[in-house]
Length: 325
Image (cartoon, rainbow, N blue to C red; front, side):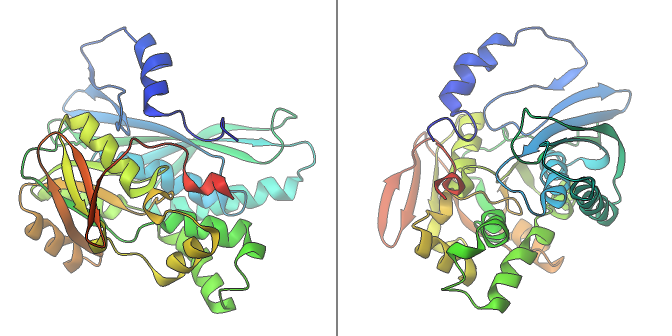
């Protein structure tokens, strides 16, 4: 159990990032804590790339693979253009199982106007359930892209949509037996349907014309994990008011039932933003149909959170809450 999930940030620094040393002048965005993408300058444009596997979900994995990967490109303010999709199926999987993954992935890609341009598919005993890994290729104008490194003193903290969205969808689809005694059929269907709403591409592209200074896609580790990573990347502290972070009722019920911390639950569908004018950004996003609110401020050197009148220091992200199930 201790070795399930992403490396901790400390492990990532010590055994991965410390080993990466070669540099090229045409690389303009490099790996680091909280960095969602790499980027290469090509003429007047920047090619943005990111890769992600889907390992915590089995159902709706094709949909999640497309959205999670394209969300990374969106966090850089880049338009996703193409996807490479790798599918590793266990020996007991069927051709129809693979077909379902591809069909779901293509449906999600169609909605984003992204082309699946290649990949790899095989049956292998190296996995005991379906594993899907996607790589996105995105495009941004040179000088008009973001990373998690741009948050500045007195910038507002903005969160889009709702905490724990992806975790809610995964639990409802893959662990229905654990929650069907507390949720109605309508609520379970609504929870599963959240997997169709986890794209942050729209807000990522809108941010290019707003006073946004940095963005980070909220994935494993949830809201607090993403905040810690952005603060680390930007070398700054923060104070977030968790009472202002919107949590759907179905998500709250699931987390209370399974004793999960909703603020550390995988949350693709949320975008964490820093902005020099939080009201302008939040108003613009809401006017474009994207729920968004200001939940705090980047300040000082310590990462703090307030909840129900209690303020505490935010610990670095550990294993996501989803792996407790």
